[in-house]
Image (cartoon, rainbow, N blue to C red; front, side, top):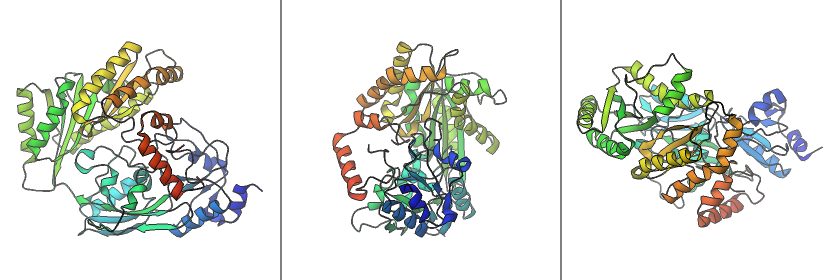
Length: 469
């Protein structure tokens, strides 16, 4: 018997899945860039069973690959190809342990699907402000292990800012539990932060206490055509001032991105009659029933058009209009897929430098591959832009993407680095960005990460090959 087979023999049979038709959905990453292999998937039903699984696998020297909804863009949740690793899925840990409405908090299992948590918060007249395109399938444990961002970071911050407490099973099977949902707790190191963004390399998150916010009583959403990309930071600043810092989302959408989607989805319509090179989707919210957010948005639009920042715009008249605006924004990635896929660059710079980055990066692409199609969009309210490149018409997508990633992508990442930015704004490192971390990461930080990994996981058995080589 192999080490894996011995370990599986020591575990309860009803948490072990060996049927390869079922197992296969856990071994290919979300973007189908990497296909691994595993003998079995383990699906524990409780924290105690997660501990048992980790202890048993550790005793037999079997590496662990923790997995939530398997929506990673960086192959962080897929096993390697030699079958020596075992996937541990958290999908059956999906209970809500507590909702404390007066404390604006909820404590939940790591396997809870994000959209389900939205619904539970809403039932209590509250809101969990973490919002992602994959929220119908991603799980909160995975969201935290990758420090997910999403569309509301400009007001509520990354996933890290929403965590009050955390529980995790360590590589030796012991339990770290600090789930108390306190706003203030200055008793020593804030250990939970090690696991947020750790991509499962230091332990398996099994539970968390999350901040909730009061459900908005007023919401205003506007789709704006802007005169030039250089006005982005000015318009964001003005929007914050007019709304009293109530802006939750400030999304940029290029016309080329919109064209890719509309060209394949003729049932969708443009929100504005005349095309523009650059658009902003702006949303602001307040829990007060007294503040005139609609009036503030209309005043902002009037002044921005008068000053030439905005050339056209519309404010959603009802929820149907709002949903249409967001449907266009959230389906931009689908437009890329329908046109052969894209080379993705998940980049962040200061909001004050974002327009300059997009302009210079666009010039780099045009000078190296003038027929390539740019698809640029993202959460520009927090400096995160998805600077993606779609193969030209008639090109072989796989060949184009491979050549582009080798010859042009390094120039784009170097530009971000020169501007003091990051090559990974919200996707993480996983397996696919290890070389970028080695090239652009801070050596002191990487050395400290290695020390932490060695201290908590001396055998290197927890999600090996991810984040830290």
